[in-house]
Length: 286
Image 1: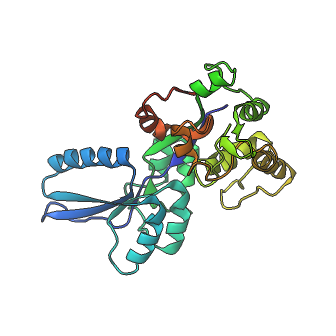
Image 2: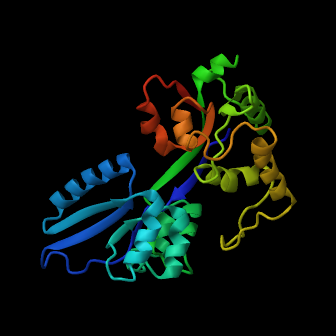
């Protein structure tokens, strides 16, 4: 299973603080809650404040599920943050809604972005020559698997599937059902609302020969025969092969951590979470 990379555009400035140093300044920073990220930012804030006397940064977090609603309610009321963390897929919506202030061209211009980032990253934040965010991280998606469940199914615990055909075959072999035919162990976690959506739109469509976006990234182009074939392959795993279904055992991450899903497509940001699960033997495909 190929690894993929997609830019996560984490920082979008909502207000530019001017005149720092003339008087004490407090910058409010919002992000959706993710424990390891919150701890990291806390450390960065301490270092930043030590290097910049007179500037105080207040970090405020909200649940991922309600983050956009909180922003939408706060900005029009003049109660929003100065700086915000964004999932990259939200950026066009925020720009269109007028929530974000354009970054100063003296520092954040096409020359800067082309020099600093890979082309696909720089292009993703270019809104007609205007930039509202600065990418700070790139994530990697990959197939992860439970080695113990592989052993129980008679599979080599150190050899993951290498093709889509093998992935489907492994998923069937790893699925378990009760006497009534109800799924009790998913061969492959199927969570389109989780990282599944990144897998589907950024990788699976391309593997079937579809080009998912127009050259300017302003139009979705899933709707052709190859795109339909890709989507059918994915949905057949749920409706026909019954190797998993959305929200099984709560969600894909919970199911995998609990040993109720043998395989999952997840991100590099999940490593610390999985390593913290006692007795979970897991691998990641190269």
